[in-house]
Image 1: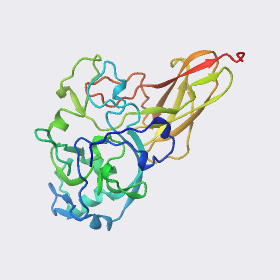
Image 2 (image 1 turned 135 degrees about the horizontal axis):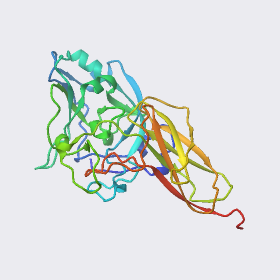
Image 3 (image 1 turned 90 degrees about the vertical axis):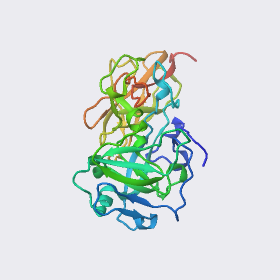
Image 4 (image 1 turned 60 degrees about the horizontal axis):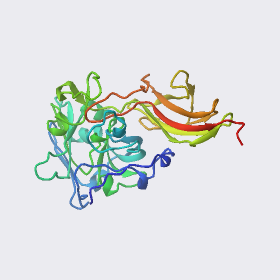
Length: 343
C-alpha cells in the first residue's frame, strides 16, 4: 500500500452518506493491510479472559450499524494564522459513512472486563519507519463502552484496505486519530496510554493563548470530542440583487446532534436559520440548505455557523494551537453580487 493522504473536494460533500471511493484518506505510516487469513484481534490487559478473534469469529457476533462523521483532527489546518506545520488540509478531510461491526462493550464483556480499567489502549499493524514512534492511542473507557465499535464494513461493503481492513476502531463523536486502522489489539488499562502520539501530539490547549505563541504540551490535553462546526459545500460565485441563490453544506459535532445552522451576510450582525435535512443519526452530520437573496451589490461574504445539541455555538475564530487541530471557525464564501439593473 502506498502512503496516501487525500481530501474530498467540497462539492462532493453533498450527500448524507459519503461514497467510499470519495472518502478522504489519512494515515501516518505506509502499511500493508493484513491478510485476512493471518489477522486476528487480540483483547488483553485488564480482562479475566484474554481473547484472540479472527475476522470470521468477529462477524459471528451480534452486529450493529452506526452512521457517523469521521474527521481528521487536522482538517482545516491550512486556515490557521499564523500557519502551523503539518499536512496542509483544506476543509475536505471529513466524511459521513455507515459503519458496521461489533460493539466494543460486547467484546469486553466476553473478555471479562476488570473493575480497575479506565482507558482502552488501541494498536494497529502499521509499523513506523526506523527511529519513529509507533502510532498508539487510548480512548477513555467510558466513551468506548458507550459508543465505540470494531467495524469491518463501510457503507455496506467490506472495509477497504486504505480505510483499515480487515477491521478498524470507530469512535463516533471523537476525532479521527482515535479511529485506529488495521486494528490488531485492544487492551483495557488503568492508565492512559503513554508515548509520542499521546504525550506530544494530538493535544489541544486547556486555555486559549495568543496565536503563534508555542504552548507546552503539559498545558494541553489529549484531543477527544469533535468541536461544533458547519462547512459550506456548494454556492454560486456570482449572483444578482434580489435573485435568490441556493447555498448548502453540512454540520457536525462531538455532541450527538446539530440543533441549528445559521447564515449571515453582514459579518455576524444578524443571522437567519437554514433548513436542516430531516435525516439524522447520533454523531452523524446534518445536511443544511439556504436560499439566500442578496440585498446589495458588491463582493458579499456569506457565513455559516452551527449550534449543537449541547448548546455549543461555532465560534468566529478557532483556537490557535501549534498542531493546527480542530479548526472550527465560522465558514465563509464570497459571492460577487451585481446590481439587478445591470444587463
